[in-house]
Each structure stands twice: as C-alpha cells, then as structure tokens.
Length: 220
Image 1 (cartoon, rainbow, N blue to C red):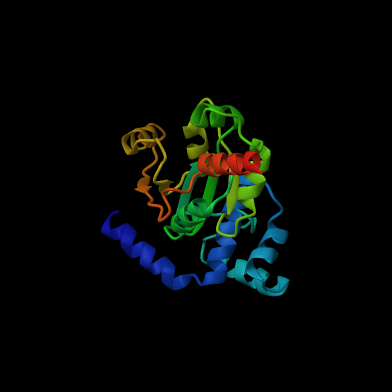
Image 2 (tube, one colour):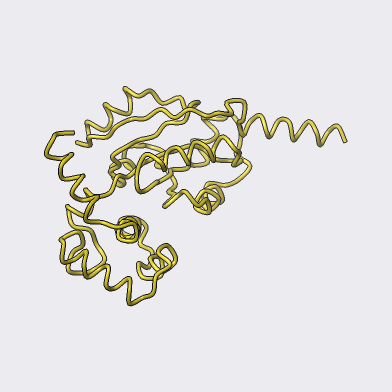
C-alpha cells in the first residue's frame, strides 16, 4: 500500500464514525445480495430512521455514497476493508467460530462462501449432512458474518471477482495454496492480501465430530 493510500485511509478513519461504517458495510452487502437496504440498516445500526437518514445525508455530502442514497461511490468502497473466507461448514464447531472471528477482525466486512454440495463431496469424500442452502443459512446466522454466498463450482474466482475483497482469509486446514489464490487474483486484476488463519483447536473438524457422534450412537 502506498503512502498516499495510507494517508487517505487515516483520513477516512477520522471522518467516519462506527455507525457510518456500518451503514457503508450494509450498502456494500445489499449491492451484492439485493436485500432491502432500509430494513437491513435499521437492524444493524439500532438507530432511529431520522438518525440513519441524517447519517446518509452526511455520507452523500462527503462523497462516500451516491446521490441515489443506496450505493457506494469509489471513495465509499475504498473506505471498507472486505474480508473473504470460505469452506464447507457442514457442522459448525468452535474451530469455525474462532476462525471466522479472526477473519472478521482483519477488516470491516466478512463475506463467507460455502462450498456447493458437489464441491463438498469432492473435498470431504462424503455427502454433506446439510444442503448448500442449509449451510448458507447456518453461516448467515452467525453474528460475525455479514454475508454468506454459495460458491461457484466451475471457477472460484467468479465469486472473488463479485466480492472484490481486500483480504482473502484461509483456514489453517484449507488445501488452497497462497500462490494459487494470488495468481488467480492477478488474472481478475485484484490486489488482495492472502492471510492464513490459525485455529487454537486444530483437532476440531466436522468429519471428526460426525465420526465420534456416529460411534456414540452405535455404542448406545
């Protein structure tokens, strides 16, 4: 990151308060998933409608939000640090929670991609317990996750290009190589940092939990 970008980032932090950051984050997410903006902002910000409108007025004035009051300008988008993480997430366990909290701590917005059922079978060598839609709903319900998407089977970088993250977070046990991710980002002209996250509970895994549960059931 250049000195000019660092300076601009520092200036942005001084201008924006926490509620304005949340509003910008919600606008970014709603641009991707098409959800109703006003209802989502009300839930996230816990502010009155008048206060939210006043905040948006200020964001428009400072050129973070377009005149339509629902989409980000280039300055607004650059004010956010978006983190992208992915996985199967068939059985949510403490390792997942720690990893996703660590990913969210790297930026302002956390977008999570769950693997399709077909990809899950290839990765885990078994059918997932939950469908891709169920896994998406489960991950979307986690407080640290701003948006959960179902991945693209043929090309993972289609989703990366849609999200355009500043940081791509990899779990401690994910097979993706940093070089593969970096080279793929270059092809879509995305300058993203790849971060490898560590889990304090490496023995936790969905496969192990499923195996132990199955053994306990058979032992009854």
